Length: 635
Image 1 (cartoon, rainbow, N blue to C red):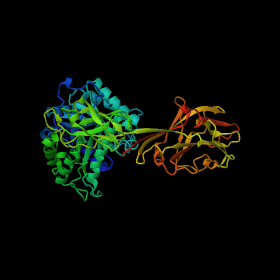
Image 2 (tube, rainbow, N blue to C red):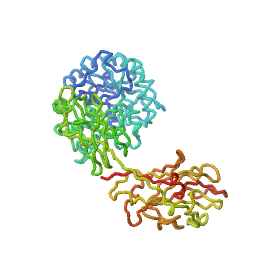
Image 3 (cartoon, rainbow, N blue to C red):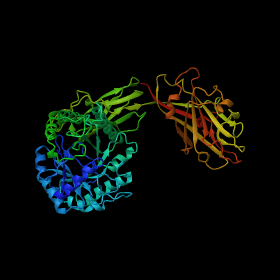
Image 4 (cartoon, rainbow, N blue to C red):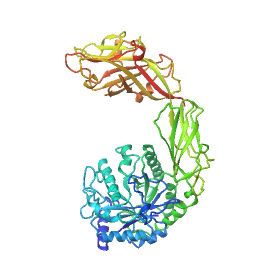
């Protein structure tokens, strides 16, 4: 399974090695090795075995088993004897086509596939620590790589290429640039007859707040993540680092699955071993922790990284590491337990929370499986949910969809795979790692709708422009007001809902929506935009008393949300107040009320024209009254 082959002539090797020693703190080299866990078929010389779909969904049955690094093309045969079937290869785009062909042909002779790590040692991208050959461009520039792709695409063992390394804090790449590189690299290779995957050395996914879920699949097919302290290998690391690495792996997989991105996950193990650090990785630790990481069933690949305090040896020079590669392959990758299929994830396939009569889950396995039916699943529910049941199973290969009737009531609904499941792979190996109870639950909600009480709602007008206190009020009008009058005094409106009488005391509120109906505008324009949006002040109980008072104008709320800059849909404004769900009153006493005060962000627009938005109040016709819609469940 594995390895990185740096294919350059001897003089260039020496030059680069010296440069690496100087810049080791900045440059993270290529590594990788792709291996098959249980049943992966090597891509052979037959071009028909290559998918012609450049956007093909990555196969979770393929596992990458990686190491760094190899300097001699003769090492391909040695590594193949250790189980190597794929290598990431560093190709300088200024190199010769004959040298590139020699690398591909040597790898092919050993039945080894290649993923290209392109580099430009003569003219690298500014501020990019891996000598990137991609000039800065808004949507990616692959001009320097095309000659290399022309050669590589002639070989059936060319299966992928790297588009970014530490892109956020080294190369300063934008989402559009990485996405452009991915699309252009795949399209160009496909035009030459090769369907490939694009690899991105992303560092990690779980704490990348700057990386939205909808960008994950857009910028890569394979995510390579790592943690320097995996297994307590650096002197600055503590004993919790192994569990931290495990948690990172699981969190990365959870994020990929939750985003529904079709992206493979590779974890890079830092193997600081021989010198430079007071705390070192022993061979036993390396083997133990590596097997534990592989056993998570969260990974599509696993990697070794052989860099230590500025020294970057050839894999064959790193004698301490060599025994680990066949050991991990024989005991963790190719062992009977490793070859058995496993559940890798169970995720929701629909919106959440929901009140639907049925929901769907997507169940993914580590490899293609058979004999999947309703009896292989069980449901875990909250006490408030009854009669939920698995009603259908569909799918094939390693991905299945399970349909569940939600039954009656409300609560959490989770799909599990119990120990008695009879699912097996195509070689009849039974499902391992059971029970699986780590799937995403649905929140099955009940819905309660409340209308504002006519005798308690209304609007108040400020006493003077800068007073910040109520001066006049109206609790009998069929309309509410938000905005200002000709004297630049602000209008505020108060709504009152009896929520405590109808919500169970132990209800868990999942979503809160306020719906208010547009009645008209005084003074022209769109007051919501003119006054910079609606603010909602929420009070659990009452601002002063249940009835509208002048003091309600300035009374302190429990929570303020907004501004909401929105337009009506079908005549109704819908304000999502879920962030204030803790202040929805569920108790009958003392008042059972939840009150909401509405106002604009700007108190007035500094002109002498009355400009206000009119909304229907609780005194309006029943079909036009304000509504507070609460979705909840009973645990």
